[in-house]
Image (cartoon, rainbow over all chains, first blue to last red; front, top):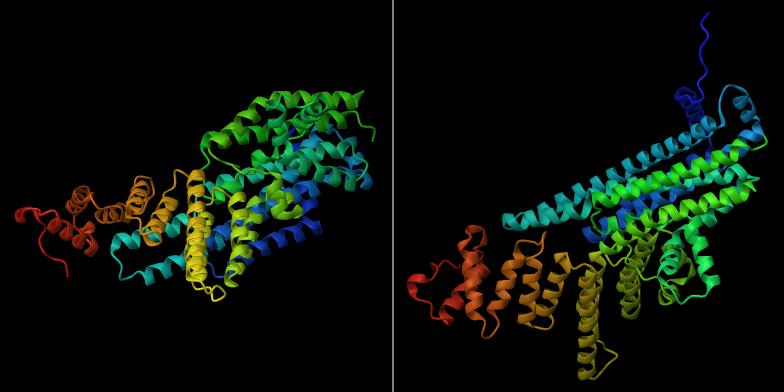
Length: 295
Length: 251
């Protein structure tokens, strides 16, 4: 008899749930609307007002990365918020959990599906962004070479170098990676909120508040740690904000990347580690609530 | 009970991550990332929506929107609005050299000329005064831009041009071209420009001659018409012995 041993944690089962979640999410109209809107925004930046090439590249990068950041965050929240309520409503969760699938596998699979979706959307947006940037860069390089054909070689080389420096910057990749990390954090936190939320809309509303407060957390934390003169009620409130909410400003490196600031590898590694910690911790919390949840 | 346990876990995680977040924030400060002072003044300038957007991680997008508005204001020659908008843009994106440079250029080059030719002001003295005020505004943008981006050559170069073209101050122009030339990524002409400006400074001819001669000796790439002309002028002025002078090849 070939009796297979049931493992409490199986990557195959997780992969199956991940694949299923991804398929489910890609069938959503909201996904296509958001992605299409982001792509139109990024693609449109090629037809911007005629600025000088530095201005044009600056605005193009700002719009491109801003659109990626906005749509990745939105997608992370909207896609994750509906996962659990939808499964409960469709009664799919009962079918899945009635099989030898543990709740942690179910949650990990669901989150992995969303993270995969975020990665695919970001890849598509990133590819279009770099395509637009390359097309504009090549056009400007050709124009510059034509206009300066009579200039001394070192001046031409300086001008072409300036064009290339304005367009491409290797830090753009780390900026996009940090956008993804922020998306992972938000997805994981949304999953946690949805484990005790009563509806999808409640989860989305809570996450919108968390998003805004998370961007102010750094101010609250610095004020809490550095100010001694504030009253105790203020200090308790600041501590509450600093300890309970994630610091989302730490993941906003694109503003400075676009401005040409280099992101050192050490800083990127620290930010990535923090992002992974956040994602893992909120997943753990989601499991701790979902583990005992009456379904 | 479970709610409090979860809350406690989140708070404990908050305590655990606090040193790491604090360290990353310190690195950001060190690298001048997120160097924006979100205060009430900025809130009033940006409006509620702009302020919230800037706080929510869309600072560069808000800055761009304001930059486009400034561009439109410039096309309409609304100089007061251009100044106001560029102040907001540079406050939101202090690490974007381009915005400081553009702000200074609009003030010192465009608005100053418009002020000097203002048909609404019949008194020349007042028009010249307004022109000087715009020079000063341009200079202020560049000085603050340099404070925010001390490692980048572009704004030193822009300030040098402002001193050279608007204030006709060769001493300061030479100083800032030299500062730009000393920074990584500076264009190769900055060191030549520094020497050209120095050659116009009374009492510093010997210093200028030595620098121009040093550049000349670097090879053909540096032997441009202006450099040759300035060098020959200084040779005559300093009475350099004939056998030490450069060959006469200026067209």
